[in-house]
Image (tube, rainbow, N blue to C red; front, side, top):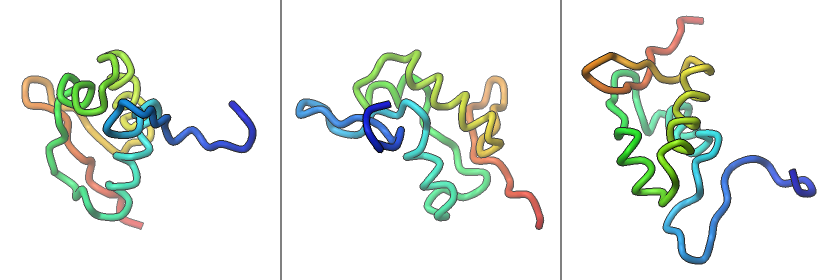
Length: 87
């Protein structure tokens, strides 16, 4: 990590969006309500292409969101925003 920078992604002059190395962009959208429980997320390939990163990077970001219980995978159907736990 360089300095006090947070791991929210890297923006290059030639890229259109921050690199989703840790899923913070999607996590922020989920927590803010922009993405609601049950919303379908783009495929790993679509995320990789839209952020101009390797599929492994996009897959890692989705894996981290799954570990945080923010998304859930449904085999053969896709990846969805997880239901929020009742407090």
